[in-house]
Image (tube, rainbow over all chains, first blue to last red; front, side):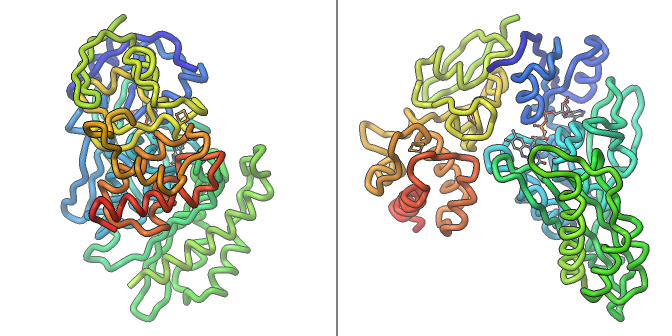
Length: 289
Length: 157
Ligand SMILES: Cc1cc2nc3c(=O)[nH]c(=O)nc-3n(C[C@H](O)[C@H](O)[C@H](O)COP(=O)(O)OP(=O)(O)OC[C@H]3O[C@@H](n4cnc5c(N)ncnc54)[C@H](O)[C@@H]3O)c2cc1C
Ligand code: FES
Ligand code: FES
C-alpha cells in the first residue's frame, strides 16, 4: 500500500509555506503525516502536491504569556503530554494527548494536524472547546477563530485552502482567577485508540463549593465536538455533589444526531456520552480548588 | 519528481534520490536491504515496522522517506555492537520473548525508546509503552519480562 504520485516541497517558514500554497492550488500541508499518509495510502486522498511544514521551527513549542498559553501547531502529542507548562497551567490538554493511540503515533502526530483534520474520533477537539481555546490562522491575513466555531462538520473546519493553522491559544486554567479542575476521560477503540467517546470537563468552584463555571464537550459521539452547554448552565450556582451532576447530565445531555458505525451504534454512543460526561465532571470537580 | 535525501542509518550515511511517495519502510527494506524491519498491517496499527528516528520510535510504514532527510535512524540491524547482542535482544532470547519473531524488531525498538526515556519502568509503564506493538504469539508476558531484564542490565532496573 503506497500513495499515488505527488510532488514534494519542503517549506522553511510559514510565509514560505503560504507562498507554496499560493503557487500550487489544491496542495496539502504535511505535518506529522499520521492522518494524511494513511488517507493517501488508501487513496482516499490524492493530492498532487505536498508541502511539508514539518521543519518550520516557528510553528513549534509551548509558551505562556499573561494568563494565556500558546501551543505551536507542530507540537507533537508526545511533547504536549510531557510539557511542564501544560502540567501546571492546562493539565487537561496533556492528559488528553497522553491518551492518544500509542507512543509511536504520539512521537509524530501534531496538535495542528489533529485539529485541522477534525476527525470526530480525535481526542484534542473537545478539549479545545471545553477550555475555550482560540485557533490562530494565517493566510493573506491573520485571523482567530474560537474552537467552538472552528469545527464545522465531519472532517471539516473553518480553515481555508490557502491558510495555515499557526498556533492555539488556551486560557490558563490555574491562573489568578482560581484553580479550575479539569479532566479528560475516554472510552477508546481497543485497536486504534481513537475515541468512541471522549469527555473533556472544566469546573470552577466558589469558596462555598458551589459551581462557579463549568464546561463539558465530547468527542466521538457527533460529527463535531458536542458542546454540553445546557448541562453546564444547569450546574452554575448549584452544589456539585454526585447527585446534582447525575441529574443535570440525565436531564440535559442529549446527543441529538449521534454517530453510528460498526463499532458502536448511535444509541450506545449517546449513553456513553452521559456516563463519560458525568465521570469527567466529577473528576474535574475533585481536582478544582 | 525525485528528491535527494541524506540519512544516517545504523551509523552509515546514505545519500540517495527517492520518489516522494516512497515510504520509509520500503526505502530501508528494498533499497538498503535492511529487511529486519517488518511490514505487518500497513495501516499504522501493528508496530512491526517500528524504527528509531533521532532516537524516538516511529512507524516507518506511516512516514515518507523524504521526511527522514537529515535524521539518524536505528533499525534492528543497528542494535548489536561488534557481534554482541544489545541487552534487549539478549533479554528477548533469555526470556522467550518471541515465538515466530515477526513482531520482535518493532517490539525491541519500541522498548529501546521507552528505556531511553524511562530507565526504570514499572510493568504497567512497559505495557503502556508497547501498546502500539501487536504480538500474535507470545501473549506479551515474556515480552514484558524481557524488557524488565534489559532495564536491570542496562543499569536502571
Ligand atoms: C494508528 C493511529 C491511531 C491514532 N489514534 C488517535 C487517537 O486515539 N486520538 C487522536 O486524537 N488521534 C489519533 N490518531 C491521529 C493522530 O493524532 C494524527 O497524528 C493527527 O490527527 C494528525 O496530525 P498530523 O500532524 O499527523 O497531521 P497530518 O497527517 O500531517 O495532517 C492532517 C491534516 O491536517 C492538515 N494540516 C496539518 N498541519 C496543518 C497546519 N499547521 N495548518 C493547516 N493544516 C494542517 C493536513 O494538510 C492534513 O489535511 C491516530 C493516528 C494513527 C495513525
Ligand atoms: S506495518 Fe507499520 S504499523 Fe503495521
Ligand atoms: S512472536 Fe510472533 S507475532 Fe510476536
